[in-house]
Image (cartoon, rainbow, N blue to C red):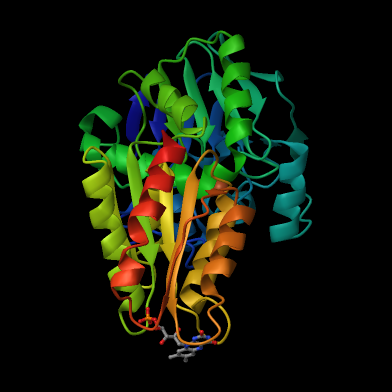
Length: 398
Ligand SMILES: Cc1cc2nc3c(=O)[nH]c(=O)nc-3n(C[C@H](O)[C@H](O)[C@H](O)COP(=O)(O)O)c2cc1C
Ligand SMILES: [Fe+2]
Ligand SMILES: [Fe+2]
């Protein structure tokens, strides 16, 4: 079933209530998601993107109910990733030879994934246009590395719709489709989670791209991303949020993240949290066990934080495997302007705190000197070191 976006533009995507994991097991989906595809029916009929492979039959059959597939004059592929290109092969089997408009990098990613099938590619660059009749045009804008080399956005004149691809999207299923119909708290949480977990590594490029788009002076009435809600009510609100989020975003929050085998490091984590409350009652403090908390939710909390404290006991001369994996994920996100402290228990060799500090430094955090390193279970002397760690974290973040 199609859903009206505006005038002759309809949503023909897939509402994915049942999705729980995305990118393998790399991204948790807690509120469903959608793969958005759009059908433009001006003098020319244009399909913007498709949906993920598991839903290709639904997608193609649905399209057939709306139109004769042979009416499709052009297909625009804003991005080659399988969640948007996964139905292209099935569709092109029905209408071979239909021109596919995409970037040169998308030709590589599409042929790399689906093989060289002789599809009728038309490569485009920023500023290239395509007339679709009724005085309207599509204008293409490359979005290199947001978040793949092949990403681009497509702007439709006349209706002033920006088909923004993954940018401004969220993994969030909203049956009513539009941003003003969604639960606002959930919407912003999901949009931030998407930014923190998918776009953060490319934040400087987001800043640059937003400036470039604003210089084009295109009126934007609607932002139609590839996942989640269509922004029709004050679409500039999500653009402004992206500008904020891309600029070393932080709130007055400190997140304490740890793992433990015998609860000693957990006691230190909670002592640190309690001390933050004492020294800075206004600072929001959250404590999580890394191995028991959804990693993407936790990364969203880190994204909001001005500082973090990370704890692990020493286990076979290293940190716990859960913490090692988490630190490696943290490094890929390239968060900026945040401070970090390290703590943990040990029994004999005690390498964990040093390793934590090195890895936090390598992940781009400014690591404070004071640490809490407790031989076996923390005692009074160890807890006495907590205030210095906390005041260093708070001082450094003022
Ligand atoms: C499987 C295992 C391996 C350990 N390896 C080391 C080690 O290499 N070096 C060390 O200093 N302590 C090591 N320990 C001791 C722990 O670091 C110590 O028990 C610590 O107090 C545990 O902190 P927790 O209560 O936060 O789990 C090991 C403990 C376990 C259970
Ligand atoms: Fe993508
Ligand atoms: Fe996507």
